[in-house]
View 1 (cartoon, one colour):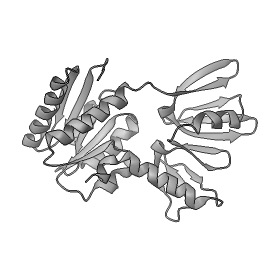
View 2 (cartoon, rainbow, N blue to C red):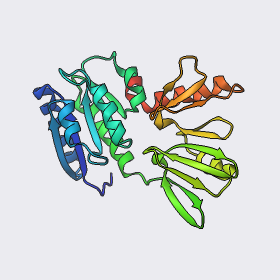
View 3 (spheres, rainbow, N blue to C red):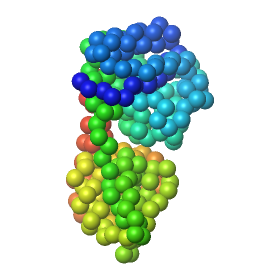
Length: 252
């Protein structure tokens, strides 16, 4: 299993013994597979992680859910404001919170006590994602061509004779190309969904559906209506994608 980039991992858990066991298991897997591991940093609570956290600082974050101060879910919500790419693996002694973590797009969900075999599988899958080539979208802006990593695209909107690409950090690009050109490129990737005419969303950037399921709410709070024709199929596609992102919950 090739891995060129050393992995930097964070463990957030207020139980020192659970944190130590997880750290030992991670070292065991990386050592057994002869893969580079840059560092494992342990944090006793979510606040201490957020004090030093910055985008792309950690490739994997193992996050306990039930903690005495800031919960793992609240910590992850703040983390996502800074980094949409970190692989979050929730760890807890209860199965009850699995579906509450969906809006935060976790990579997996481990129930304590976690076996080494289960941890090995999660780490193996995580490394595959980390080392996978970064897909991108080529767009024309004036006379220049930009390559935008797909993970950084939140929404694509048809805007008269232009296409507006809204980034997950809030920045926008007004592209001199047709919506059909962008649609052809993006719809080959499962993370993108055309929820309405002239609107393509990145499902990794979705917070939830509205209560009446008439619109999609993005992480930044913006909403986009779901077209009436084919609405059931669209909601099914979105739900299935969310579940597939939460593979761990399906194996509990």
